Image 1 (tube, rainbow over the protein chains, first blue to last red):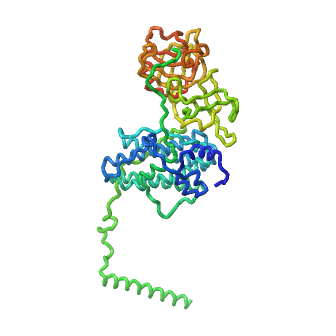
Image 2: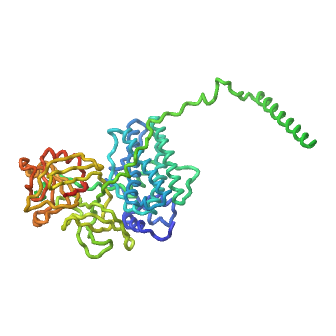
Image 3: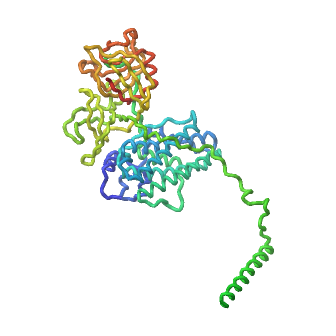
Amino acid sequence: MSSKPEIADALTIAEIDRDGALLEAVANLYGSSRADFLRGAAFASAAVALGLALPSEASASPKQDVGILQFDLAFEYLQSTFYTQAVRDRTVARMKPEKQRWAHVLGTHELAHVAILKDVLGKNATKKPFFNFHGVTESEEAFTKTAVAMEDLTVALLAGQAPRFSNPALTSAVFSLLTTEARHAAWARRLSGARPVAAAFDEPKTLKQVSRVVQSTRFIAARPQTGRRGKPRYTG
Amino acid sequence: MLRRRRRLAAAVVGITALIVAALVLGGSHGTPRAPAADQDPAALLPDPVAPAFKPTLRPADFTTPASRWAPVVRPAEATRVPGGRAPIARLATSTPEGTANMVLLQPGVRVVHGRMWVRVRLPVLPNNTTGWVRRDVLGGYGEVRTRLVVDRRLLTARLLRDGREIFRARVGVGAPRWPTPSGDFYIRNKLTTFDDAFYGPVAFGTSARSAVLTDWPAGGFIGIHGTNRPDLLPGRVSHGCIRMANDDILRLARLMPVGTPVTIH
């Protein structure tokens, strides 16, 4: 890790410090030198709540199964858009071939996860939120670090939720996502120079904990109002 | 040679003793014997639960070209070069219609004095102006895969998605006194539920502006909308706006998202 602040970091600090935080998982990974940049309080907002609505903590039930899957879908939207934007920003094209392949493979997997969760949820599938990555996808260093944090967080999310389904077949299916995400995390960690395996045990996180981390990033933004009811004043 | 034979004999005696001891101890402590062929322990374990779903890889759609737009989230100045001082345009956060102001992203990202700048298409006169704005005055990026192409000679509008035509209609364009400007623009907003038959049921605002009706209310922006005079279509009949039959504009409204690039030939 370079001690010199990188360009996108500077932009991200400017964007994020006002409100607080970036991924605490990155802070854990990269230590206290990034604490000011990364650590901070969680901020809830209506916009974020729309993107990551928490299902109830009640005992397992088909209704709760849907709630957990909706949360997982919102998270997969976040991940797939994150990789897609880095490709569109040409950040991935500027990386070494090995990292390009990694970003393309992970992006493709995350898109597949979105597609299958939408299929499974059917009419209960939530709409894709609007994202603002605050320049993180436009710098290789910021993109890589955030990818590591995001993959680690996904592992913690799925490890926490897989046992909560009332339907064992859903638990089994989410385990198949979990193992894939764990490999993503290890791959991302290796490419970023971190240890591929963080610890002897992965600690699961609750939905509330994951939601708090995501909210702190402010990656889920209010959708801009691009339409309204009202009389035009165009030239006619 | 003799030494090797002695070692071999000792090993045979040792192994035999171990086998005997294991059999004796096993029998005396009542531990289960090796299962019979029909009692394979693996057969006693449940089968794994079949997953409820299994993702299948599909072609990654991030390799398909798309256009991107972004809302202006802070009042900003656009400059001719990244990091430039003299503004060529000032951008508000909202349009005259009260929707979020937006710009269309163009290829180009530069870093100047630690600040990221991006190149954007601007909703200003002269038409077709592009400039540079700081990345942090823009919000997140929206993405569209559509493009509207208007042909003033053939009087047609065609909507393409991923390069394939999905909509076509005959249109009215500006009269010779008030020509529809040519060039590259984008859809800035979409207005509905207004009580004015002149504009039909739906009206899209574009980033194009009339070069002659500059004192028109709200700046003389060019719209794409329905009409109460379908009998005049197709033709050169408008003040610069692109008019189409109400059925056509309703169909277009279902297909064309805000942020769609517009090319007027």
